[in-house]
Amino acid sequence: MARIFCVANQKGGVGKTTTTVNLAAGLAKIGQRVLMVDLDPQGNATMGSGIDKRKLELTVYDVLLESAGVAEARVRSDKCGYDVLGANRDLAGAEVELVGVDRRERRLREALGKVSQDYDFVLIDCPPSLSMLTLNGLCSAHGVIVPMQCEYFALEGLTDLVNTIKQVHANLNKDLQIIGLLRVMYDPRITLQQQVSEQLKDHFKDKVFDTVIPRNVRLAEAPSYGLPGVVFDPAARGSQAFVEFAGEMVERIRKM
Image 1 (cartoon, rainbow, N blue to C red):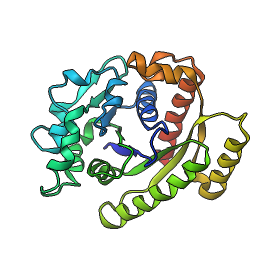
Image 2 (cartoon, rainbow, N blue to C red):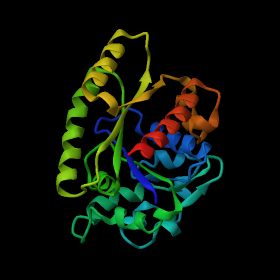
Image 3 (spheres, helix red, strand yellow):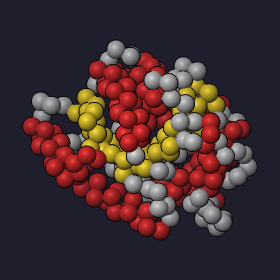
């Protein structure tokens, strides 16, 4: 039975897509069966997994509108070692088309339930806003992984996200919880980042993952080659950190 996790943060530019594709690749590397779901109309996680979004015949859009199932729409990324339920610009229209339909916030959950036995992990890359797409992701998930830069404004955005998760937990998905906060793009030479990191650990305690993802040029370069950093340059510090994080995720899930 798959464990389903959203990678979410209402603040943009914090590394959600980088976290999703590299965690997926890291989990695949240590022998886990992984499905990566791209819920962002920009399709960056799809492209970053070596899949050309312009050539997809079926996407998550078709799954949400129930014109296709996950088993039909998923594609294999052989380079990365995991399956992809991709997205492209069509997905932007789903917001409007879902407004008047039944079970609109539960459609992804029901679709993923049909392939749950095929995977150990399902990772959902959410857009940086609280939209119907994000709501579908949160209603599907057992938990939320929150990538965070150790900066002041990131703390401000975290408060909003925690409130959103509480509301979804109370009204739509009793399973939903914050699995952990992942510190990304971390530079230990910057005093402010050290201070914010300590504040996070003081306030959220064991909800903060031990693994820290360093600021790393190779991770930033990898998307231009259509690959996660873990695949593009396995020896890079950032790539090794994501494989370490994948191991920590597996351990954390075993203890839940």
